[in-house]
Image 1 (cartoon, rainbow, N blue to C red):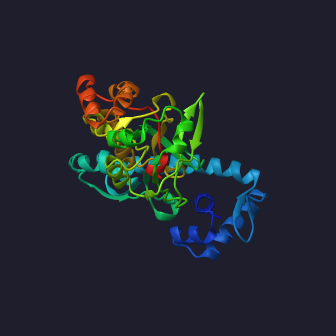
Image 2: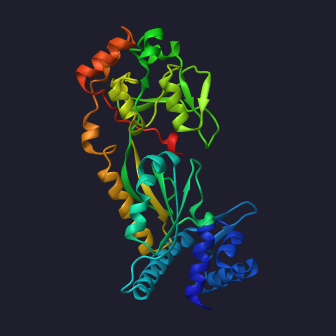
Image 3: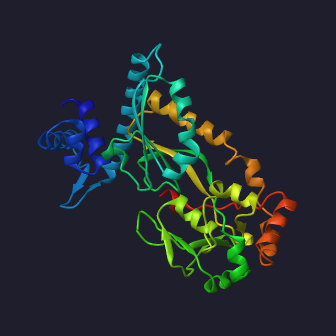
Length: 347
């Protein structure tokens, strides 16, 4: 038995959670994959997987062995990559996936620079708000918003995504300023529709350190972040977009922060990649490059976060009328930018 091959096959079965998907990615027959795993279990004299008609589950021994396999295979791959790539820069096809909002606002405008730095990397970028299976879909690296749920993935934190509760001055002039969360039941929200559940996402707030969701009535919903914000600008209702999307609207007075004392929490933006894959040079340079984009972006700098505050006074002014709000904007210089987060716009 080729023990190295057996480790690779076993690890791929675990990551794909399927003998069939593992066989496809390894270009082996399903029978061969099954035989190799059975031979490995016989060699180790212990079952590694519990097989049912619906899914595979690691035994305690299998989980421990898998962790060892990941480390061993990563070390071998890193060594081989270092030897093969000695004296050469990163090269090859690199598949990445990210939320459309982050792609449009942060990554796309600077992709030409990545190609100038790494001309031998063929970059294939997928922009979408639906989660992909990195292993099954052959994605080398993805950018995601929120806490990492899958323990088989490695995450590199890039920045924090913050959201802000806003409305237009026109809306506040017509409907009044909500001063408490209970007031929201008498208001209208513009809903963002989750691509995961296909349902409206409630507005979220931080109350005494806890996240509280509030169901606000509303008759409009969008699954596109740009359309969501555009609708808010027309005075249709209250919304919670990512702060980086509405900074200019806050400064111009087109949108006003409300309920700043209950700002939503922030969520991490991370680059993730499968634990079983060594951090190939092409993946490493892309992750470092994207990290640099976030660190340099005025949308995510500490200065932008420190501009949070002052929203209550401008929202207060808005109830006097839209023109009064614009005048207050000119005097104040900027509207408060909330420190919170909305993963759904990037889910």
